Every structure is written in structure tokens, then in C-alpha cells.
Length: 412
Image (cartoon, rainbow, N blue to C red):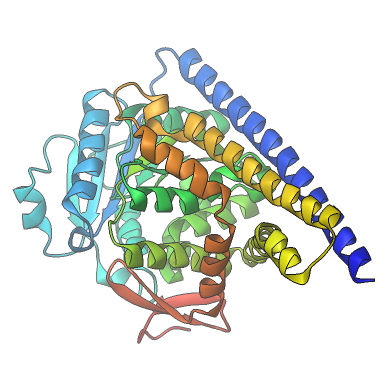
């Protein structure tokens, strides 16, 4: 009976690996086809310029100098190249002097302070976005498309050009994602977690707005009523995602719109960041969170199955089968990571962006192939967490795990 169960379990896990291979192929081909179309409409646009406004919420005190300079240099280059009409940077009150000391400002860039009266239980980022969205109507900068840029990454001007043209052409929401330049073990770890999204962006049902660079036409922005929807929420991307789907707008993934992000060089910070990402997924996409939890429970089982069977003392045939499954899972993981580096590493997309180092690229491929236990531990931590810290603010999970608000804030 035990032998039959182990054989049945091996067959079940083997079928799961076949599904993963099919999913990788479908996801890769779909992403490549979408990017090819975005490039074609960008080229076909010729002289039809898309007037674009960049909106950047920025908490200076919670950002490193590398992060800030990455973002501001992105904006300046995009304005100089004519890809962006101008930018609106929304900061915390009192941070104006810090920006002046960094030399941020100039023609086409407006700096405004967020207003605490905008919302009581939303995140600081959403408060800044609400302030920025309300200022667009009276801003000297005029445009057809708004690109929201996170203030902790380098957004290549060509990426901004692509999302602007694509959002106007599709009349919907276009999203990029992130890549952490592979320079050390921390950047490897960040990418092992962050690049999970690449594996599901080619599938419409699992595609999400999440990652630092999002564009949509102003008329879509108004229809989604984001000024209101942001007011009582933690995540901006998840709200855009849910509202766009409710209103029937397409969500498009731009495979070359990847924001280059510096990694925090402290393991505890990495782990807390990873848990927070999964908490947001748990709050806003509970089905997706539970699906990931199931997938990585099975993947972890596949990795440890040979050891468990060796300890139990099964036949060589079953032990060999379980070992083959584990090796196949590792090979699939390596393939997935190689495709991510090839397709989404900014250095492999744009010639003027620094490339990943070969040693750490190899480390990323290897660690991605055996990531299941790490991802499972992060998911479990996210499942049992009741509070977390984001950009210097502590948030508590309320309403039976359905939403998060600043701890101590009143909410209804």
C-alpha cells in the first residue's frame, strides 16, 4: 500500500512538472509576441507624439541616495529626449530642501508636497499619488498619458516611451516590472523573489499591475476614479489592477519596460521586503496567494522527496524516480531563470545599461532552481503576519485579514 501511494505521488508530481514546462513555453511566447507588437506600434507611430506626464511619489527620508538619483536621472533624460512633457514629483512636507541639495528641479519638473488631509488610512505612497493626480488638472504640464514611476529605480527612457505609446494604442493599462542588477548575493535574492512575476505575465488571468512603472491614458485614469479608490487602500498597483479589470480595460505587460532597482544589502531587509510583497498579494489577490502557497508546497516536496524516501528505505526504482523528478524540477528552474535573464535583464535589452556580472548571473540561475523552500517560508510568514513596516510606517492587518491600515489609524 505504501509503495503504491509513493508511486502514485511520483506520477502526480511528474504531471505537475509537465504543466510547469507548458506554462513556461506559453508564458515566454506570449510575452515575446506582446513586446513585438508594442515595438511595432511604437515604430509605426512616426511623428505622432504621445504627450506624457510622469508622476513620481517620493518619500525622501525612506529612500537611499542611489534610489533617488536613479529615478531623477531617468526623468531628466526622458524630458531631454522628448519622451516626457514634464514630471510631477510629490514629496513629504519639509523635504523640499533635500531635493534642492541634490540638484533636482528645473524646467518641466514640478515639486509639490503631499497633503495629509487626502486620506487617513491609506499608505503614504497613495496619499502622494492622490495629491499628484489632483494637481494634474491645474498643472502647467499637459499630456495624454500619465506614467506613474516609483522613486527607487532607474526607468530607461525607452521604457517610458514604450509604455506611453502602448497605453495610448491599447487604450488600457501598461505595466513594466523590476530587475535588481546582479552584483552581489542580495541582488540575487531580490531577483529570485521579484522575478516570480515574469512567470505569469504572459497569461491574462494571472497578469498583474505591479512593479514601479505603470502607464495609462488620462481618460482611463479618470474613469478608474483612482483619486477616490486610492484613499483607503495600501497598494496602488493592486487597486489599479482590480479597477481596470472591473471596468473592462486591458492590462498589458511590456517586456522591455523593466525598471533597474538597487538591492538593499541586508538580509533582514530583503526578507521583510519579500514578506511584505506576499502580504500585499494575500490581501488583494487571495486566490493567487493560495495558489502560490499550494504550488510551492508541492515544489518543496519534490526537492525533499528523494531524501525522505532514502530515510524511509524504499526500493531503488522509487528512489530513482523521485530523484529524477527533483533533478527535472531543478532543470526547469534553471531554464526559467535563463529566460528571465535573457528577456528581462535591462543590460540585455538596452546597450547603455550596465550588464549583470557573469558570476552573479550564474548564482541567480542556480538559486532560482532550488528556490522553493525559500519562497514557501516567505509565503508562510506572510500568511501568519499581522503587521509589517513599509517606508517607515507600520501597518496592521485588519478586517479578518482583508486589508491593512497604518497601526493606530481610525478606519471604517
